[in-house]
Amino acid sequence: MTNLENIKKSFYSNGFVHVEKLFSRDEIRQVLKEIKKVKKKFTKIKNKNMHLTKDKKFNTIHDINKFIKKGKIIDFSKDRRLVNIIEKIIGKKIALRNIEFFLKPKKTGMKAPVHQDNYFWNISNKKALNVWVACSASNFKNGGIYYFLKSHKDGIVKHELSYQPGTSQQIPKNYLKKKKYKKVYPNLKPGDCIFHHCEIIHGSNANHSSSNRIALVMSFKNKMAKVNKKRWDSYQKKLEKNLSFLRNT
Ligand SMILES: O=C(O)CCC(=O)C(=O)O
Image (cartoon, rainbow, N blue to C red; front, side):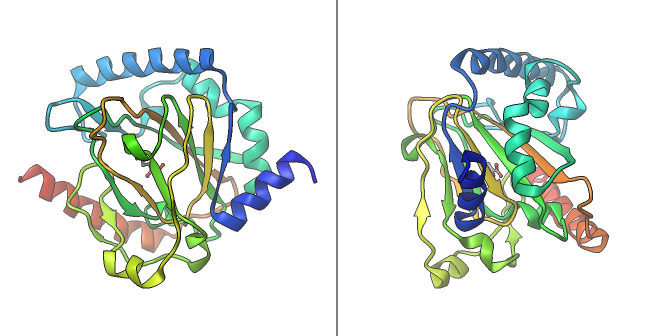
């Protein structure tokens, strides 16, 4: 079996696959420099795509691809090493959906509530995934991403408002209690990537540690994959409810 076939097999069996050292430390340093620049830009423009911690540090910034059109981060989204893996998993001809930063600063970085990405994306044939690029170490201690193993096999689950910034909906605790999935915390080094299925249940804890946990997240879909319009519209209303709650607190 080729390496790409092993990656695909692991992805569909577990719901995610951890690929070590896909990018070099030097490439990650370049990305970190760009992240700094984007943060500066967002400090000036302030909009609904960004969420701050209680001590006013950037926690998440979404829709980065609407604000930057060139540079190392955009190059990453077209990088052959990445594209080969994505095409093996969801089929040829892929489209970038979104680029986000999950910056989770030390001490005050906020949790990402437990969710499934496809609850937000509404892609009917599920030919979509997230690429989670570690730009720092990421593990159990510093609020690293965690997964409920094989949970993508059970389809979309009911969510409720999270009342949290950055990830507006969450899966109720009693559902997870009933299902008894195995919860795993991958241990990533800078340059490692995770490719995760759009329906794997996942989240991350607050970062109380003394080290930042920085991730660049890019989502892709197969070009032919269609968004379910009715579900999309219904989700937009739920998103607005969460945003409105946050605006008024
Ligand atoms: O990085 C995190 O803390 C959460 C990221 C996430 O939810 C995602 O990549 O879908």
